[in-house]
Image 1 (cartoon, rainbow, N blue to C red):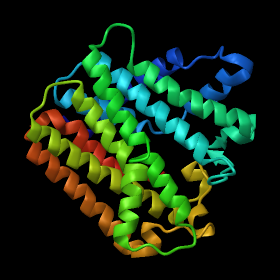
Image 2: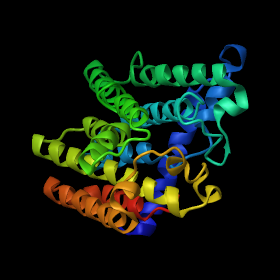
Image 3: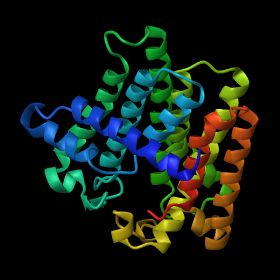
Image 4: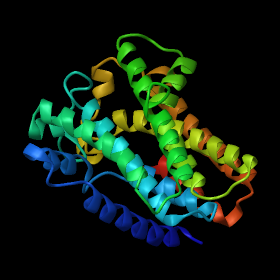
Length: 296
């Protein structure tokens, strides 16, 4: 398998995810809510989390239909978090994915409701009346809930808001981003693996891979925030510096932050080697490289 093979695989997976989102995110929710939900999640974003779910599922020869539901659920949680994070009470961002943020387009109240509804829809997608064993539904829902809640994304965001204007050391910064960004990326890998059978050793190795790429993603995000223009990023560049937020660049410096991202990528590859999944984990390997090499 080569990188060109990966591109073909990724295009097929992205088409499946987009089609599922198109089908499962309603356009007929009351009072324009459906339009706000669809605006917030369709036709935009890298879909990294869904790709991680699907690549991890393939690595363990798991249930592709279950993994597609997990991929959509993860993306709905991610999209809801962006809608809420962009609001004036949080980061007050005007642009996301190259277009006005949901609260700019639809108003703050509708944006809050759209995020709430996408969060609920994620768990509805994971718990169909049929087609998935109840035990798998419960396991996937538990993994996603923990990654999104106080011990994951929401907790990390709370630390982030409390840290404005304060200097964090590297360990404190790592813990914040392990929760805020890394937990959902790690959960994406674990949800894909949960759709198949894997030994405890493989489960642990994939978890370590997910933790490494989760942190690498945030390190690169901090680097891009100070090195790329808003037009490239699809969101407002330089916001962290303007708001005096601690980042890997402010704590480590730009050169050291870049070195750290490469070290985390190497950690991810070593975790895949420990998994002994070999060629079955090739797409996960490519995704680790792409996370560190990206420019937006």
